Image (cartoon, rainbow, N blue to C red; front, top):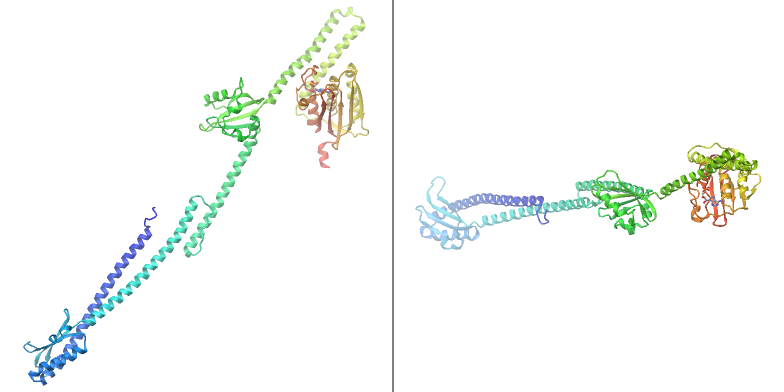
Length: 588
Ligand code: ADP
């Protein structure tokens, strides 16, 4: 609605005012006319009385005055009357033939006005004789009546005007107040419609009805505000939750628009792409992933765009910043872009590689003793009697050693599959010193081959340890075998058993002066199938030994493995395990 357009209410008020004004004017006119008629009647009566009185008086004058003096007497008498009464305009006397005897008009012509009321009265003698002497005409000037009419009209106009003014003023003030209150309400509603929930209207100086309306409005506004806040809180909570989930998902998530520009990415994606959100947002994904060669990213994205209709995510492996990343691309909504999920499979790829290595190592480890065994057994079988007893014995000794090697290897593989599975190991309290001594003894043959000696240092009065003796024995044996394997000939290996620094734990360590391990490999050597392959590590193995130690100690005994090593100087491998079951300790 235009600002200057009249409201229906204003139109009604104006029409009311016009109609009431017309009515008031009509009423005033009718009232004035009625009053005037009544006044005229009264005035005529008044004139009739005067003329009759004058007729009676004139009868006496005419009777008692000679004809020649009548004119003067009547003139004198009329003059007295006219002088004392403004409202009588003229007096005229006529004889019985209707001839004028005297007319005051000749002397007092000023008073005779047009439109005056003229009243005739006959001049009749005595009640009984009833002689007609003529007539008297009295002309009334109408001064009083016009004065009265004016006064009445003016009074009526004044009264009606005042009434009208008061009426109009009341209407105007009332409509002003109502409009003002409505405007306050209108402004409030406008604020709500623009989303300013919680806006309060002041209910000062308003009528009771509007006050109640304003109270209801404020209540509604407040409720809307609370509702909005609750809604916002809920939405924010949901949004934060979703954002937190997305941001902290273990895989990288990147959302791109149709022009390949990145519009969203989570922490893992930032880590994988080596880029902060600030630098990467709104830049093409290819800038961060594209590498030349077979793992090219942009080529794959265009391939995905050409096969977008597929319901399955488009999947390919790529190399990003030295990491092998499995990439899944899926379209988003109706042509809004696409979502890329980046899964770091570097470790799995490494494990795959190591598994391949492991199989080749195991095959090699198996082939060597089998070949040796075959050769020796074949020689003995075909040419045995050509050799003397000592040579035969030496052959059989070698066969025995190879069988032991084979046996150990098969045991390692079996242990690996057993320990890696979730089978629970039976445990009891065992004397750890005795276990260490017998374990050292079991590798003495191996040590002798390299002329390596052991020095055993055991803390006195160590308590019995709650463990699966068999698996701990094998774990220690692995450490001891490695120490021998990676030590130079004629070396010394220190085996220590003591209470660990961590209270409630016992520690076993094996210190050698072998080749040592470079720092970058120290973290990985406990991983399954991991082997350090370089010139200094030409000794064959499966890469399972240390992994088995870790699984035995950490998974099955709640302990910890450790290594301290310096390349070229030697290594100390060891582990700590709780003396008592962990659960029992927690109860203490
Ligand atoms: P394996 O000895 O069969 O290769 P392990 O799991 O026992 O497998 O050892 C993993 C790797 O850790 C070895 O390949 C070797 O490079 C390194 N390693 C283990 N023990 C020692 C040690 N005492 N000194 C030097 N390197 C060692």
